[in-house]
Length: 155
Image 1 (spheres, rainbow, N blue to C red):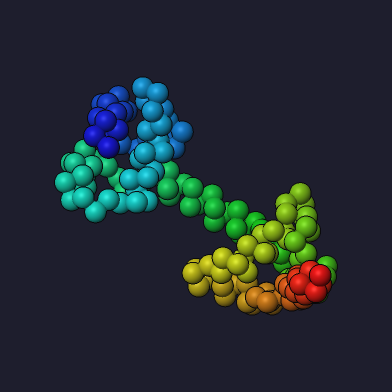
Image 2 (cartoon, rainbow, N blue to C red):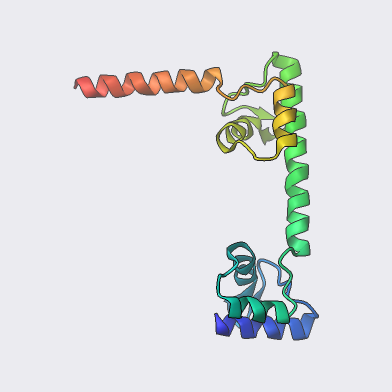
């Protein structure tokens, strides 16, 4: 930790901030990943927290804000594709392999079901669109998997 912190101080001297991009390498060490880890894993060692803060470490960096903005734009774009799918098909139940405008909408729909966001605004949008949290595809694939398991068990 101490060696990486020294690299962070060198980075700050050169760049005027502690905001090393995720892929930044300093003296052969991936300082960017280390910085990201400090943000996400926020140590319980008060001495280390104090050192980082004294160095001017930003806990919510521009990179985090920018990546959050990009992620929001991607989510919004996929949601628009879902609405297009619903217009064409009458439901939001895109099959897992369904591609819409070059994007794998089916995987995105599956991810929404399994990761069920804590963002109430997104939940509301999905539900207003008629999104089914337990789709026919899930029920059907579970039924098929159960039948296969039963058949194997019989052997």
